[in-house]
Length: 415
Image 1 (cartoon, one colour):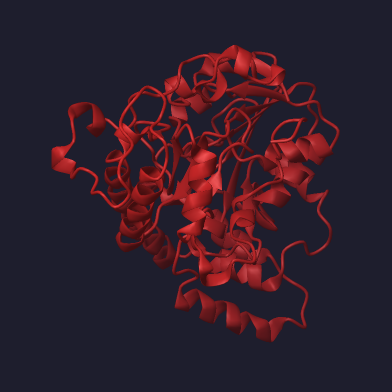
Image 2 (cartoon, rainbow, N blue to C red; image 1 turned 180 degrees about the horizontal axis):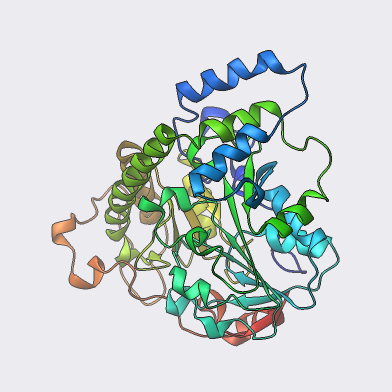
């Protein structure tokens, strides 16, 4: 974190850039083993048409069918990141508010477009849950992630719907929604019913492993789609990316994504069980009910822990570049069980080498076994218990926070 606040342009790829196969990547939230072979074949076949300019018609129609919307309610973009830039440049806003912690590109795009951004900092002590009254009534542009990166919180659609009102633009980043079984709590089914302007963003990066292709889309009313499209250059999405959007919207692809979401759920539960063993060592989870393909965890010596894990071959995502979090947080991508077991073994080694956490407890001898799940006490089994104190970001006291972060849940702080 710089003297001016978190580095909003720091993302998980920075943790593994240039490392090659030397590190097991738990920092980037892209499903392993992707893109699947059938999608690679479709993309390869699309290269035969590179001499022609891209035609987004088939892809827009496929996305519209997938969400039961009209083509006029769909805008294809070069990833969700382009969509954030378009929204920041095209839509007016007197009092834009970003709900944090969340993906930092929306705020960065708004700032780059000249907006003075306010932050609503959700409380770690309340599990980073959102209440409708947390957002200022006169905010005319509100950005929230669902499920939220990095907290893994899935906000109820009803809570988000209450944020919609005449004169307000509500932007919901659903980049990870296809990793939630049944896409529960998506706002897309309510898109036409809500007052004001509602914009939902989707990405194909995470589930399909297409970070390098840059493909996402915006779902909103036709007038908003036209307004955003007017700020795009000609042919903003490449032909291979359009092929991906069409292919990943097909029924058989949606069935595969649902299977992957169910697998994420099982693998996340396995990771949580593995992490729960280390509750006595000071490790805590951000929320009692994570729903995304990643977990946010807290440890008083997270920086040293991240460094040691890196030396042991694992990259994790630092948390202090997210507004509302501090150096004691880091994020873990959910992986398969074998990878998780390797990671928790390395985590046990790293924790055993550290001094005991504040509050006592003996230092564990490196190599000594951690307790089995059946051996844990009731307090250790509740991994999310002992969350930081309410009212300050990351559980810090007000005196430990930067001035711009001294806001309890539901209060805004200047960005």
